[in-house]
Amino acid sequence: MENINLSVAEKKDASILFDFLKQLAHGLGKEKDFKGSIEALAKFGFATPPAFEAIIAWQGNTPLGFILYYYEFSTWRGLPGIYVQDLFVTSKARGLGLGAKLTFEAIARGKKREATYMRLAVHEGNDLGSKFYQAMGFEAITNETIFLLEGQAFDFDMTKGN
Image (cartoon, rainbow, N blue to C red; front, top):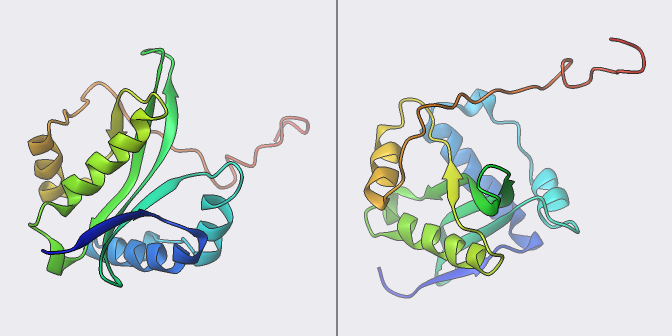
């Protein structure tokens, strides 16, 4: 594909990110689980400090994909890294190396902040995603389990004991 440009997402791009996220949820069969909003992306992604960064791939004025990530710190490594929350490329742009290009751009930006690694999770059953990351050199971490605390459990009030 010719004339592909990458740019760091700006607040005005929140609706583009939202559309990509809806497409990603649909592709994973997780439409009912997706609760994001344009407002949340704009509010948290472009705050000071921002909750995440995103890079969008463009061909002219047409967005083709994005990567959304945030910085983290590994106490075990003693070093900062990058966590990829989402990576998506439109169906018409798949197979052109755009996912790798977005990933490498996020790594390059992370290195400017002394990041030394990149982590991510792949949805169970997303075999194409797993193969893509393995082909790039990512290794599956088999000795970790992801846990989640949200809803009422997250709202626990320690002062009241409930």
